[in-house]
Structure formats: structure tokens, C-alpha cells
Length: 265
Image (cartoon, rainbow, N blue to C red; front, side):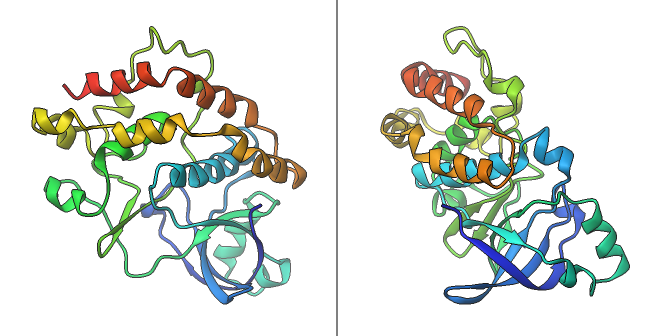
């Protein structure tokens, strides 16, 4: 189950230039003391029609199944009396946010965003490029490109963030993997596409093995308690499209991996 914490203080409003929203950094009381969290203030339309909260939660959990790092997610309650003490602009922003609990992740300090132009060696020391490429195709993520990477670095670690634009119905419903071609938005425009395509052939032979192994053992049922928790908290059920797609890929894992290999040849 996702932890639920109550915000005690708003510390910072993050610039809209860093993402599709202006997240807040809040302090909240946890069993381990007061901790900072990055809170997404999605609108009701984004929550109900685009299922942003559900997508964020499931992708955050799914990343761990492929040994990819994410700042762990929670749900945050922001009390009205806390909002009343904020600036007028912040109150206005909050007034347009959805009324339910807010999706949030643990705040990471001393991080830098990945940028295009880094050598493959830099990435290899921090993350499995082929696994991330495969993972983003699995979650149908066209939002990890050369300019907006949604990938943070801290020392030798890499963290994935911002998955609200993944798993859209048009990309996961009624997809026949036997005939389907992986779209350029998920492949050729991916942050790591050129790195993988330019790799030596002997390296390419090993690509996607870890991803394939983890995919084989992936159990979609593991996410059922989280879907249920969100439904109980008033979020619209979006489990069926997600589960059907994941099961589709699991059952056709060899086809899916071969398609990944094909686009980087």
C-alpha cells in the first residue's frame, strides 16, 4: 500500500520549465521524521481523463521490477489551513488542482538532469541504457528524449521521474504485437537511441537480456493492491487497460524484445 502523509509546510514551488506542471516541495511527517516530498498538482481533468496519478504510481512501482531507480512514491494530503497561509499565486494554483490526495515522491537533493551529448561511458556507469530503452517502450513513454530527459543523476546513481504521459489508451489498447511497429516517438527520439544504435555488434548481442529476464518473471497481480487502494480513495479504475497491455507484452515477450533489437540495428 502507498503511504499517506500530511503536509506540514510548503518549502518551494518548482519552475514550470522543469516539467508539465509546477510541483511543490513540501515537508511532511513520516514514521522516520519530517521528510521533503515533490508533490504533483494535477487537475481533475488530468486525474480523471488521463489517469495521471494511476500512471505515475504504477510506473514508479514497475521500474523497480526492472532494477531501475526511482524516488519512491507516496500520497500527500495538503490541508486547507496550510494553503490559506500561502501566497495568492500559490493559492490560485492550488485552486485548480484536483481535490483528492496528491501523488508525490521523495525529494532528491544534489541531483542534476541528464543532458544530450554525454558519452556512453558516462551513462553506462549509472544506468543500464538498453533496459531503460526497453522499459520506456514497455510503458509507452515518449517523454524521455534528448532535450527533456526526465532522468536525474546523483553521483553514480540515476533516477527516473515523471511518468504521467505514459500508458495512454491509444498506445496500449488493441495492439497486435505480431504486426505492430514500435513508433518513432518511443524509439528514434529516445534519449539512448543513438547510443544503442552506435554500439558495437558484440555489445548489441547482450542488449535487453536483463529486461527480458525480468519481464518473464513480472506478475501483473503484484499491482492489484495499489489499484484497489487508488479506487478506494476515489480515483477512477484504470487497471484493465494497463493490466491487459502488460500481459500482452509478457505473453509475447520474445516478439517484443526482437522488435526492440530491430530498431537499433
